[in-house]
Length: 92
Image (cartoon, rainbow, N blue to C red; front, side, top):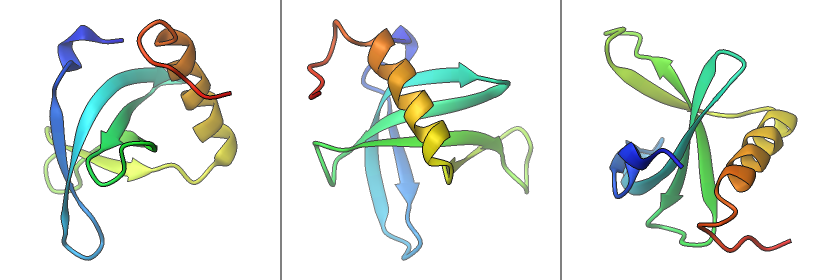
């Protein structure tokens, strides 16, 4: 787990304009891209994995995009799970 992100919170805006507060659990680099693993305040049991991408209006800012590939989602989750097996209890 990246210690820099302990207790870091991201506030995301959904498609309806609602703000969702998420705790950053980890960041994972894979094949040249960076992904964040989040725990949403809306649902304490389900993780959210998003890809970091440069913002269109300002490349110095970061936007987040959901993953469409189930295979990629599973790969990133398995990497998160392996890296954090001593910190979290994962259901099999």
